[in-house]
Length: 277
Image (cartoon, rainbow, N blue to C red; front, side):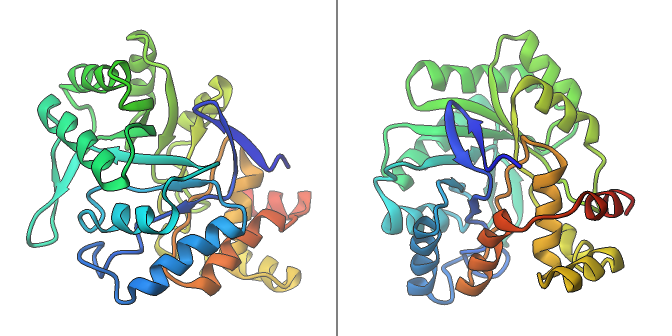
């Protein structure tokens, strides 16, 4: 199994880190223990993590602030952020993806991360079949031309939208959709990304605990002396070469467990059994 994959021209380790769990409950407000959050980020880097996924609307502003304090200037790292949403005072998730809002969101990320350019910026769609998709992609392309982002990613999209981006001449660096052993509705999209050399970063890679509670997963984990979470993440790495794991945590122990997934070897029989779940 290849341990790296190309993301916007950077070879990154396939086990990365997502910052979504660092803010307070509901991805809102400051972390319970700021020092611990900083320690987790720095330990991730020590363990070889070089792909960090974040967003200004995590917190809001909390994840980017922590990432900047812990790891700026991000030497040897690939930073992926996202725009298209904002947070309401009641912790709600609100679309913010008009061209003006996207440009503002990109600048917000640049300021929060303390950079002039983010390696990859995902356009996060809040609705399926967005009628303004072309216009939004145009705003993202303008930011590439302005040198504010290195490449464009797409999040919460369909294969139709990925194809439309190609028709418009947009070179998509990555796709970030919900995907897990127990949630595979985007199998065709994943295959298309693999064929085109596009990285695919699943969010909710353990499907809200459904993966770790599966009997096949727990049986294999027990035999291998691993945790069910490690088996679920290892299946992702074995399933397609372009899958990049960005599981997040606020725990040092869970971080080390997640990173160790990259060394977990599933047998062909294990993979076949998991495929049948």
